[in-house]
Structures are given as structure tokens and as C-alpha cells.
Amino acid sequence: MRMVDIIDKKRNGGELTADEIQDFVSGVVSGEIPDYQTSAFLMATYFQDMTDAERSELTMAMMKSGDHLDLSSIDGIKADKHSTGGVGDKTSIPLAPIVAALGIPVPMISGRGLGHTGGTLDKLEAIPGYTVEISEQDFINQVQDVKCAIVGATGNIAPADKKIYALRDVTDTVDSIPLIASSIMSKKIASGTDALVIDVKTGSGAFMKTLDDSRELAHALVEIGKGVGMDCMAIISDMNQPLGNAIGNALEIKESIDILKGKGPADITDLVLTLGAHMVVMAKKAPDLKTARAMCAGTIQDGSALQKFGDMVAAQGGDRNVIDHPEIMPQAKYQIELPAKTSGVVSKVAADEMGIASMLLGGGRQKADDQLDYAVGIMMHKKIGDSVQAGESLLTIYSDREDMAEIKDLLYANIEISDTAEPLTLIHETIR
Ligand code: URA
Image 1: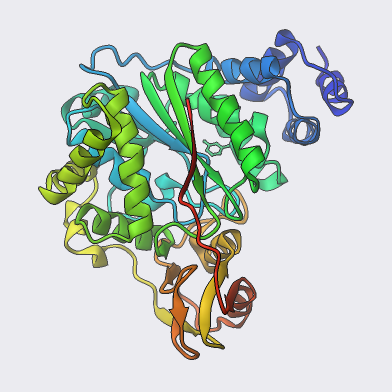
Image 2: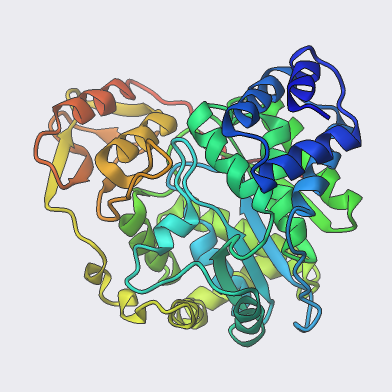
């Protein structure tokens, strides 16, 4: 089958057959299809969407492009969580050790930053020594012994996604329901988890800006999971402002540790406990969400989740001293305040633009091969609904450059101060 014919069919709104999708995925992995044709196909899919059958075929073809992990040697129901991507979304980092501290195996295969959103793997690499690339056998051993591991889709897990993910990032084809659904579910099915909670983000900092699109994505993800017999559910959570206060790799690790110490911001702590409660119920360790949530909170109070985080970091080669000495992570040269120009109530903090500002500081990639600066980012001091006096700091910019004129203009243009603010809802819906 000629790739140009497959592109042509999709470009003109046709429904691809299983063989055509299979040929596309195999050609991407073998390198037979050049990046320019893959990019054209991604753009055609972006505009024409895919039917449910095509979405499932694409997911399964991407999943089968590599290994399927056999986690059967690990005792218990394996539970995982994946987010569709947000700004300041460091949820996985405290969540995995919280759930693991309750004896539930958490085999987490995470991603890197994509577009304006941060990536769990990039954040963890801010910890000196932490490696996200471990062999499949070491991953299995670590989940058995420590009960949690957060790694990249290394080895041969969904290699098609690796190539497609990198191309989507640089061809502006990220925010597409079939492409997000197949990317997430191919990795999750290949990772062999039994239960999966998907955190579908909605709002300015999410790939899906409207509740309707987020709902459609959530249904697509859950349906693909159920189709292969996975216990799968989704929540739709708000991403109209950054989650927590920290944006940037090392800053987000420090905030994750604060969450595990019971000193984290309220919004992200609430989200972590909500997601954790669903995982605990799906793993059949609690009869209901209220009990499960209290169990998760208990692991923060008794220090077992923090201990588990240290165990996971050490098992992956990282320095567990980061828990009490976050300054061992890269530190920015300059801390520059952004004072409010007027008094009032913060009514808007455009999450996507905050993510872009962090990326421009060097915390994210503008090109696929950009090296990250782990130290840089933004620390929010005021969020939607907070009162502010003129001159008070809205946020601190962590930077290795002193001249912040452009970044400051971008930030000012995307934070609004008014007389009142519409309150935000953190969790919009639950989809089973
Ligand atoms: N996470 C993924 O793994 N893939 C996407 O496309 C978006 C978020």
C-alpha cells in the first residue's frame, strides 16, 4: 500500500481499514515512512478525526509495535494513572508512592513534556542520578519489591508512539482525540496494568479546551481500555489555571515532596487524594471512595508515602537526600518577582501561557532535541480568587537570565485582576 494513498484517503475524510492503519504504524516503526509523510498523515488525522473503529485499530497497532509487558509475576491488582497533560501537573510523582505505600503495585510508564505541558519524566530527571530508562526486567523487579516505579516507555514499549509523539510535538498535532487516545492507551495496554485511572484535563492549559471535547476524549479512552478488558475509568479535572503553585522541573519535584510531607497546595493535594482513592478502590483495597481517600491521606500523615518516594528514587539511581535537601537539584541564578499592577482579585491565570513562559525560560522543549534547564520555572503566589494589593508579588520567575522583559510581558498579558472572580471546580465529571 502506498503511504501517499493512505494520506489521501484520510485527508479526504475516508475511513481507513485495519490493514491501512497497520501498514502506517509498521512503516513508521521500520523507518520506511519518512517523517514528512507521517507528519502529513498526522495533520490529516487532526482535521478529519477517526471513527471509533479506527481509533481502536490505531491503538492496537501502536501497542503491538513493541513488547507487551507480562506483570503476572507481581502479586496483586496493578493500578496506574495517566494524565492527558497539563501545566504544573506533577500529580503522578506523589500519587505513585501514596498508592504503593498501601501495598498496591503501581507500574507507571510516563511521558515527557509535550507542547506547553510538562512531563513527569523530565521532572524526575531533575533529581540527581534518577534514571527513567531501566530494563523491562528491572522495572518488573522494582514494582514487585518497592511497589512503584515511574519510567519512560523504554526498551520496546509502543515504539510507534515514541516516534509519533515527537513528531506531534513539533507539527502542532497534539490536541487531537484519536492521537491522544491511541498514544496513551497503546502504552498503558502494553504496560500490562490491570486498572487505570485517566485524568482528562479540561480548560486553557489542557489540550482539550472545552468540557465537551474533554468528555469525548474521556469516553474514547475508557472505551478503548474496556475493549481490551482493562478496568478503566476517567475523571475530568480542571486545567484553567496551573495545578499547585510550581511550574518547572526541579520546582515541581520540591512541591511533590511538600505534598508528601502534608504541606502541599490544597488543589493538587485534593486531586492526588481523589485519584488515589479511585486507584485504591479499583485495586480492591477499600470498599468505597471515602475509606480509600482516608487511607491515602493516612500515608501522608504517617510518613509512609514519603518513605516510599525515597525508596523509589533510590531504586532508580536517584539521591534520596532530595527529600530534605531539594537544593541538591539544579538552582536558578535569578529569582525575579512579578508585582501586581493593580489591586483586586485574580480572575484569570491562563495556564497554557504560564506553561509557555516556563518553556521559554528553558524548562520545556521548543525543538525535539532541546536540552532542558531543570532549575527554571515559575512559582505562583496568587491564584484565581485570591486578593492582591498593587505591588504585591503575583509570582516568582526562576531564571538563569536576568533580562525578563519579554517573559514579564507574556505573564502580565495572561493574568487578570478584576473586582470579582468566578470560582473554579476542580473535578468536573467521573466517567466509568
Ligand atoms: N500523554 C500521552 O502519553 N500522550 C498524549 O498524546 C498526551 C498525553
